[in-house]
Image 1: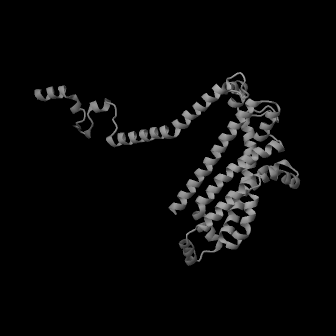
Image 2: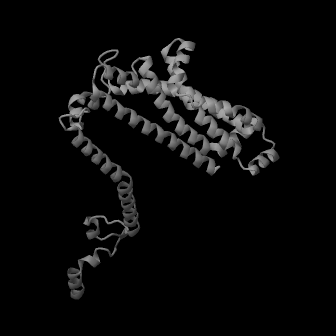
Image 3: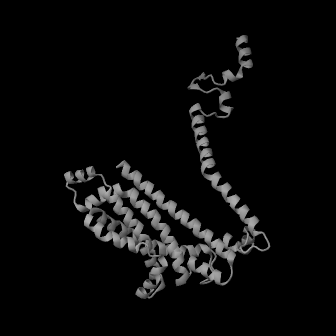
Amino acid sequence: MALALVKQDTTPSQTASVPQETAAGAVPAPEALVTPSATSPAQQSAFSKYSGASGTWAMTHVLPPLIMTLLVFLVWQILCSQTNATLPSPTRIWADAKDLIIHPFFNYGSQDIGLGWRVAVSLQRVAVGFGFAIVVGVLMGAVVGQSVWAMRGLDPIFQVLRTVPPLAWLPIALAAFRDSRPSAIFVIFITSVWPILINTAVGIRNIPQDYRNVSAVLRLNQVEFFFKIMLPSAAPYIFTGLRIGIGLAWLAIVAAEMLTGGVGIGFFIWDAWNSSRIADIIVALFYIGIVGFVLDHLVAAVGNLVARGAGSN
């Protein structure tokens, strides 16, 4: 018994993990109740894999653009800090347009509002015009992709119309609608519909013949064939056109608002130019670029979700 007591005193780490019998059954030793809970090897392995994966993702996706952005700002600061520089430096822009950067949603009147509200107004017009472009582009693309005669007859017309610059449509839209808001929406629609239409038609024409044979065996009608065969098969092509179209729509609304007025981000840039507020223009350009980046990634994310759903089905 004495030897056992001495052994227990000299090797506490071993006895901490040995269960003790009581009237209620086997329970952990008292020492185990006060020692910190340790994770299992599997949990430690999962945690190390997660932390390693997150660290690798940060190193490959976050760090490179962050470093390049800092280098661009540093070169910009050096070049524009000269006495004869025509453009403001980043520090000068911060001093002149600090309120626009920090407070994007202030509202002091009809035209005295933050850039966040102006971007929201522009996005509303983009949503309407781009929504019409999606419906018309996908439906017309499906018709053109299914019919060889429609492709041969309409493709030259599409190729001619899609090369017209967005602002060239604005006088026609103003003459037709006699209002700036529907005219801007029409410019968005007519600019963004062509890549959606053309990519949809290409995707429909590339549907494997086996899919068409299966639909014939199952005797699917045109509506069922459209939703069960055509759309899932052509989804990668359609979303490629949507990504191109949303970028063109965002470009078109900024250009159209410079001429039609209102409270959008495009009119803000033109008004700032007339008032010689170059710092405000540069801040607005950053807003436009960030919003365009977000829109493109949103469409890409939706496309990935749709592709996964189609693949699982």
